Length: 359
Image 1 (cartoon, one colour):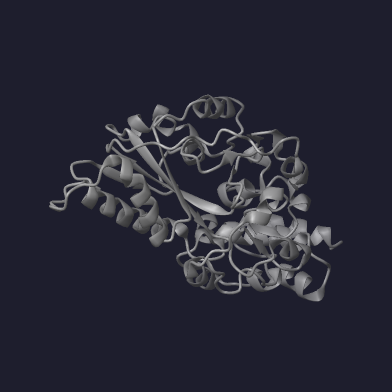
Image 2 (cartoon, rainbow, N blue to C red):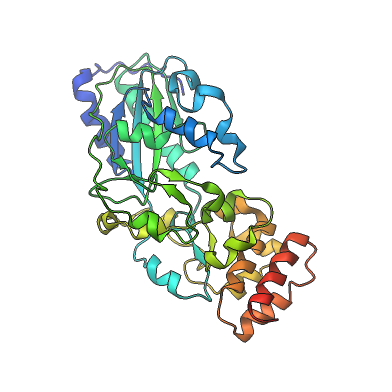
């Protein structure tokens, strides 16, 4: 957005503006905010090394845009500051670890249980930018919410919002990692915050050890090709057979590397109603979801991040979950009803699931 306000109120001193920005951010539902320069530092090299290893799998977009992904000034010329914000999303009450123990129920990553966060956070960021614009005229602002080539965790770390853990998640010592990030790129010369320098992971390797599919090649090295979030969301074809039994009942995303992190005991439940579970997706039988028609899928995932996988991908994921579920009558009958599904990909995963039950 362009900062072209004609507000005639006297502008506060730049030194005082960060405190006001924090106040406005909290009023808009954000949990924390920090300001940094448009410099991603060593994170740019880390991304380039990661891509060179081919860890991105089919996510070709990760290599697009040249240096714009790790150089904010190339993405938005004139940017001299980045305002980074955090918004918690963990529903309350919620027991994600318990949900994983019920093998006949679907596990959906906690960020996708409610409405898609993109629109909500983008609107809040636009309002925050508007307030800053009203107090400090003559500058430009542009908001991003996981919708452009932005190294948001790197910028958040440099803005003082936490450190990047061994699982590549941004972790805050008083909030864990169950939160969304957003950014405002601006040409305003705001005072900057100190980066979060200390890494509190220490010798802990719980996140690396707990990964169901052993997707970590080492600390900070995620091989997306083995990651359940990638397999259930990004991958458009068949899921490698050797990984299916390891996926359990996780049908959209995975939270395991976050759930075992000791710092999650400090996670804050969200008050945002849009992030609360919809259509019982935090506690629904795999068999019931597998029998949704495409019309039901589209209706019940309207405004949800789950739409990203598509109906065919949704059935593929659920078939894997059913193959890993107890051999009950509802599970077997649900699978048999999809044996002749029009999609060869769905049929393939159904046949695999039935073999898992000895059929």
